[in-house]
Length: 206
Length: 249
Image 1: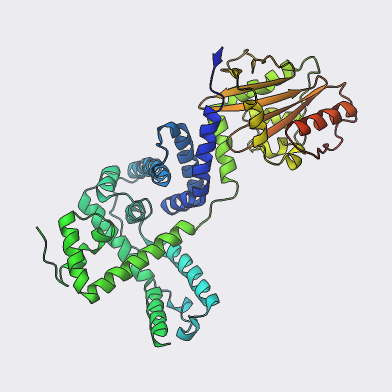
Image 2 (image 1 turned 90 degrees about the vertical axis):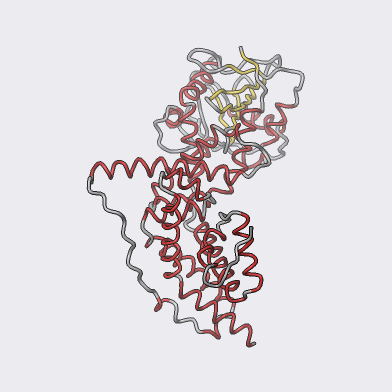
């Protein structure tokens, strides 16, 4: 018969829940943007949580849990991504380099808020919602290979060197993909920048 | 060495600068330039704001499906412990053979619970195991306090393999405390046994499951007594009975 400290295992699980559960939305959002599909996102998050729970004894209390679990999620994703890329490569021996998607403008959606209306609270709220939607839509226009680099840097806070190592691509490629991804996002969201400038001008004049 | 930056050269450093990827000397050069150039400084600031907004937006949407945590727990249980959990159910039945050979869980049929523990249910019925006492018991940590109320005793557990019994009975005749080993996880459980029926409370990372074991000869009165005693034991004042489900037993 083995006698064990009664609270150790469950206490650990409870601690894990306390740390991980509040981050569930964030982890899901990251996974979703990486995989581009709800079912993939669920699988990735669940896998990351399982690995996190299983190695939670290696987590040092007091350090940044978010960084730790995001790192696990990133590894889970990279494995998944590599496997998929490998399979695609097998099926399609002539793998062409990805082309940047054509940039579509969505000005019409935005022009119905006039500069003088911007100060009103409801409109700000509306604007924020639209920005959120537009950002998600803009990200979808970024080709997958660029998007991954962008997400690893922008949401997962990985360094260029780490990204280069994880994806097995040269550092220069990391930087150029990041640059391209951001250029597309910037272009897609340019209208919001203009609105903000208007808003600032409004504020300055009133 | 400090780099002398100009409005022409500084933009190339914007991305790595905002990503905190520059070496100290280059970053210092950028800061130097920004400190006296409002034009570039405005551009950097604007870019940073845009990045913040993008990051916030992407983090906020889409939201995780409401049942994602439950699904994870379900998987965690199955990945780490399906056999142990099957054994728990079987052992609970065996341990109470003096009562009857039937296991009864309010809100969940025996077939369902067995299917769940054997990994065949495909859903997480845990909330369904929790009988009406959850409504009156308030903070279930009180059940944890119960275990700690006997500090001098070893709380024993057995790794679950096939025939071993699920818990070692402590010297208290009518309550046992144990740990169910389930791979990486260990779940404490507590059994409040009143002969004619018993209540077991088991904790897993996200839930507290409460199941009631009753026998064919368990009378409504005995069950009522059990609920009343158990409720006062965990510090609740208003125990409620489950729907009268076994009148036909």
